[in-house]
Length: 379
Image (cartoon, rainbow, N blue to C red; front, top):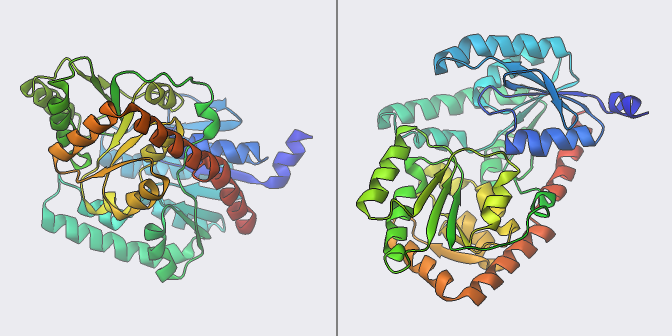
């Protein structure tokens, strides 16, 4: 009976050449939700083996030796594997896969383009590219996407700001936010310790230099406190820069670097902290997207210290779940840290209000309903 129901809902092939197979949005949220709803789901991603996890069959792509190989040889391999699946719907997640989406459309397939961020703005933030080159690439991408996106069957996006681009293009589109999975937080008991946590990828645009400088001001009077930075660095050399900064500030022993952890582990780590920091710097893409880490903190009842951006303000202020700061000013971040340490009752109430907001509104359980409605419309 289960096999029949899966066949009736349709076969889905999810494609990514950039993300790891167990990415939070791609696997844990979308793929697992589709499989649970009765779809036959295959995920093609960079992996070392063919396996089935939580009802999702993972077809491995080879690990590329370079970005050029990823966008040529690996891309062609992905397209051939996708064709072999003969799915009813192809759901791709990376800008470089737009050409694959077009080729699949030429084969008469239904195609969904899942937009994770405002890509023209994201290109403008590529600090490793010369500024004139960034502008040229951003404009070229914008023109290319406008030319091809109308051929796709649906565009999924996050945040109204990102969605406004596609509404202006007059393409079929809808919003599915990257909110956390509530059930994951139920496995861990809240045990706050003298820790401040940052979750997510670390790069020069994400304000970690200012966070370490702020923490050094706090740790001088509070030597037992720790700053836990959880995630990978981009580029890898940036981790050493941060470690050198912590050493110069005299807090090397208090700043802990924790490499990539499985998706399910994020809640365990954050549930042991007393506050969460998400002070991205005011780069174009940072101000136009909501970081899922903000909601991850709220889910486990952490008060948040967040950048005072309009999108962040729309979440933090009405729910009174944290403190907004200028992310470029370490002294402001330090004062927010000090306040949450010195006012534990207020910090606890902020965390409780944040968790309540996630349980009632900002959760994947509700967003997954939107995803399933989109699939009903496409099929």
